[in-house]
Every structure is written in C-alpha cells, then in structure tokens.
Image (tube, rainbow, N blue to C red; front, side, top):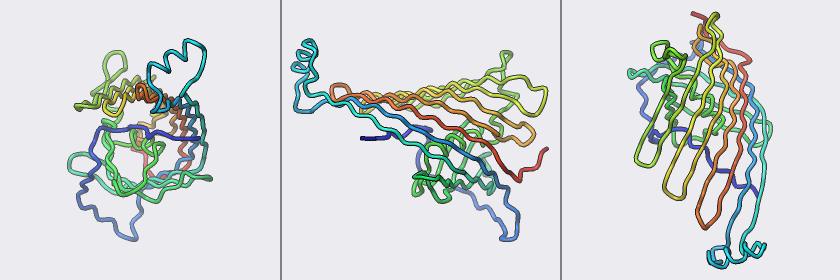
Length: 251
C-alpha cells in the first residue's frame, strides 16, 4: 500500500494573479530543460479506530500488535522538466510555465506559476504541479542569490509564517570565484491542524550567477505525519535535477 503525502512547499494561497504579458507567436521564449529523477518511500503505522488506546498499550506491553498495521510503499520515476519564462510582474515575480514528462507516472501539462526570490511559489490551482516541480520552481525567482542578503558567514535566511504554518530555510553559499557557485539549503516546515506534519529538507544547489538559475539540484526530504492515536507515517523523498539545455543568455 502506498499513500504518498503531499510535500508542503509554500505558505502562499492557491490563488494566482498574473499581470498581462504579451508573447508574440514568432518570439523566442527563454526555455530551460532539466533531466530529473524522483523517488518516494513511505512507511505507515495505522491503528484500528475501533481499538482503544488502553488495549493497545496493554497489548504492546505483552509484545503484541493488537489493532496496529504496518504498510510501506515506494514510487520512482525519471524524465524531463521544461520551463518557459513568460514575463515579469510589477512586484518582481517571474512568470513561468512548467511541464513534466516522466517515463512512468509523473506527467503534467504546462502550468503557469509565479516565482519569487524568497522561494515563494504560486501556481494555477487548476493545474497539476508535482512536488519535484516545486523543488525547481523555488530556485528560479529573481535574486534568489542576492549578495545584499548574505552575511559575513556567507549565510542568509528566509522565513514564512502564518497561524498554522512555519517555514524556516537557511542557505550557505560557497566560494564565488567564478559565476558557478554551490548553495546548501536546510529547510524546516512545521504545520499544525489535522495532526502534526513536519518536513525537513536538505538540498544542494549548483547555481549559475551569470544567468541567475540553478544548474543542478539534489534534494533529500524527510516528512513525518503524526496523527496521534490514529497512527503515524514517515516518507522519504529524493529529487535530482540537472540542466541539459537552455536559451538564457549570460549577463
């Protein structure tokens, strides 16, 4: 049995507001193509709702598994993602269209999204956007690597808070002797309501400063969902991305 939890990627609302952007049919639209790999592995411990907490505790002491079931499942895929840069909003958001073509199940037609340098992502709620697509979208915003935000320890932090959601992401940039730099991300997401959902993300990003875009991404996600007496689940997600072609000019 496989029951994949959706990775929480942004605290933004689902509604998307786009300013008009005119692209002529004969105009060359800047396009990025990435190869991707994706995998998820989930382990679930579920408790029968008809089993009381007291009986489960008693049975556990006796070495039994009364009312408790264990499930596991996995999913893997690989393929390509294509991103077209459509335009820019007045608030600095970059308007893009992203699509995914996996060899197995991860397939999604183009969806319009707006991405920001603070990793905020807003996508068309009527379109399918997979978690691995959000992984890429987070790092496509203008000024994702902004020298003005980097402290003396080559670090910067991004936070997004709401009543039921807390996102904290720490970034450290490596040597900047060339336009190609390495950025590490440690991202923590805490969500309350409907059980406790915690997501810990460790990411390594190869970033081209001359084109302000990620060239490689290696993300490892551990997500834990605690439903109290109803059970728990732990899911490990792994995503890799590698830029294979682009029409973005170097500055």
